[in-house]
Image (cartoon, rainbow, N blue to C red; front, side, top):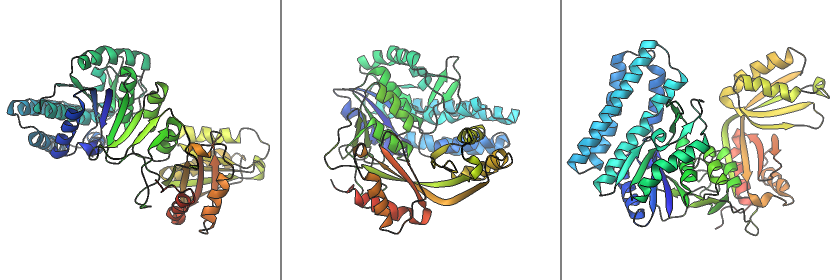
Length: 467
């Protein structure tokens, strides 16, 4: 088989874990062509984000002190995960060279007193660059032929939307195939940085937080692999958060559409952007636990077969949200009110998670991230109230969203009724509801104090805990 193995930061944040990953790759490389995608060590991207913000104000001395901790983290893992002295020295030399480059970038930001989206992306890319050096060294240490690559050198080309760049898939596919396939044919394992790529002019870009999953499926599409494995710290996608419900179980199979709904609504095992390249090229994606690789996992594929009696597959809880209600008789029959709301939010870069409007046209309810609430209300008051488009705007910051997902919901009668009954039996009031035409998802809004009780009730109503 031809497999992409993506390892997240939690799978690589100690010498023992790096050695475990090396053994996994060795075991699977005997009869397979393996390409590895590696994320930054756990917490490193957050540290780089902090450094990028602080470097325009902090002195060179403070930058040097922060980089000393950064260097120690990576060199200690390298020393403890690699036994061969020659390989170890080469890895440590490369790490120091990369960190010196990072130091120069940070000092440049300090000298200018400004950080641009382009320089921020460059700073954030250093975590993955260091990880692939360590992983490549650890593989060589156990006799595996491996070669490190940045996403750019592997062939991933993007537009210039720094921070959340979009791959130019035609040229990317061609370049990746030309660069990596000859190595795979020779039995050499490419170790590619997740999260980062470059523009056509060579400027470093990033694919957004969680973008290593995206890198894995981009490579999978370009190399026409048999499967992409997302190796993380959980046994696949689960019916709900096991911290809420102890009998939550791993979902064995999902369609791309179901997986997309789940990732958008908070399932952390896979990034939503990773679905598209896999779906377009019909490449199966497996979510596996790095520390329990033979255990239960989730297969995401083109198959949307429905098990008899299985209506819903998962129930997700989204916290840190707020609901904004816009109302007034003046809205009735007046075209463009919703468009005005969307335009207002778009200008402020506020994302709308849910929207519901009554047929009377006298009320529109929206769900947004809680940190955007104050800005959202202020801008709506200026754009709507002051111009007579609406009579009232109020907000609730003590709510949560519960999303029920499953292909079996499509065409099934009474699903919404069962959801309402399950929460009503627990004396929980539904504040808002939304369902798309795909019928794969029903989302409801309830008060925050009742959210976990509502998740438990819905999980039980649809028997999601059964094997």
